[in-house]
Image (cartoon, rainbow, N blue to C red):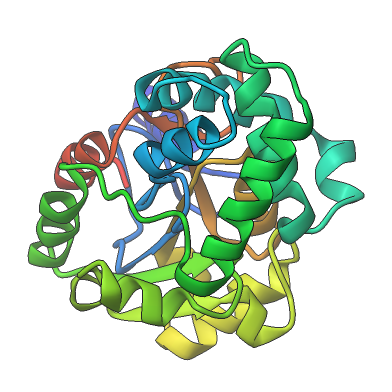
Length: 258
């Protein structure tokens, strides 16, 4: 009887919504595929370029200050109503307005002019061109662990070309750009497309993203286990797994948590 109760306790620890056997410290599912968002996980805005564009219009703020403001702005943006009533393209420039506000820069004609200039650059080249130092080693470590890596991102149709330009294309196996597919996260169909393209199963896949209402909600609706990248610890109460970095994700994969 005690053995039966102990087995039941173990089992209860690893059953996730939908009946899948997941759980920290005890995992009966063999992870095979990792979905990764691009912006906010692999890539970040080139804050030096943003700072220079603003300075050209008389607005002085350092790239470092903008970078520090980004997580707080992202949390503001990560609102169910906002996500539900906007598209990724329209949210992008709201995001930059929020970053400026968090950095203590009020909206003005000057900031609007600078953002318009940056929008032109983004359409041609993609402004999200900064790759943190830990990204490539983490991707290499995940691959060494035998995992298939799939980028699943809301983007503007230039993501594949952009990843090649900044030297990340060879570090992943498949790239899913929402603009090419005609559907964007949190719609679960984008994850379903990614699963099909990768020949992967939802129960052996995790998705790592930076927005709860986009990445967690969308992945979960497709039956994929979500992992929220929460670098600054602003989301302590979310009902999903969290990691503070891709390096921590690698450690947890190696430990069998995923």
